Amino acid sequence: MSTPGIKVFAPASVSNLGCGFDILGLALERPGDEVIARLVDQPGIRITRITGDKGLLPHDPEKNTATVAARALLTHLGEEQRGIEFEIHKHMPFASGLGSSAASAVAGVVAVNELLRRPLEKRDLLPFAMQGEQMASQAWHADNVAPSLLGGIILIRDNPSLDVHRLPSPRGIYLAILHPHIEIATSTSRQQLSPSVALSDMVTQTGNLGGLIQGLYQSDFALISRSLQDVVIEPQRMASIPHYQEIREAAISAGALGCLISGSGPSMFALCDNSLIAEECGEAMRRVMIQHRMEHDLYISGINHEGAIKY
Image (cartoon, rainbow, N blue to C red):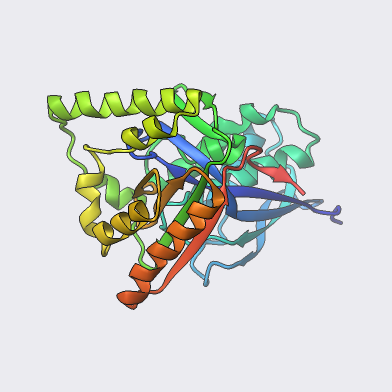
């Protein structure tokens, strides 16, 4: 016998924001993932249905980020024998740099918490969602999971201890996100990064990070624009994104505050100070894709301030 299900939406996210590798991220209004979960009499977690994945995601609950995260929460609560069925509906691309695995993990833990009548506060679900994300990315970094769960713009002061803090979101901020139809796995992309950083680059990068945070607090769009520069990670990743320089220049020419790689790519985001400019930047980026006959998706989104929610 099963109970009526509950539906949870967890948003996509943009991580790094240029100068904040592994420590900055923001939640998008769209796209995102949905999980429907219901209690059943038979003990254990099962995945009964997955849509939108083109048959790529595992139904094995030990290998799917949503159910790995959900199981971690159930174990913490002493509810390992609880019977739960999951449906997972993917509404965002894989290996896109938009936090697909993080959104599924977040949706899984929020669904379980809702089914069990919220034994934990939302913020306390973070370490369990992280266990699902870690399986996918082979790294413990919360710059996708934390914003997807909590919403807004998030600073992770320390990833091991999950010391996370919400930063202000200036009114009017919108993003144009271009997703070229190629895949770049986060785990593969991380392995290609150099472990060493030049001293001069460290100084520039930390200055940009401080400037970006100060710009967010003061709603100083000029300072935000000057600070949206990555001299450490982006130079190592941009060669893997076709027409990176053309896309960036098109967005900047259309009025973007900055245009950078979202996460490990291939998606790129243009940060804008209003929705009209975001739409114009999106069309400028899209024209580059059309010119080169590349399939792509384009999303225009504000910042999602709620994070994951139950419908």
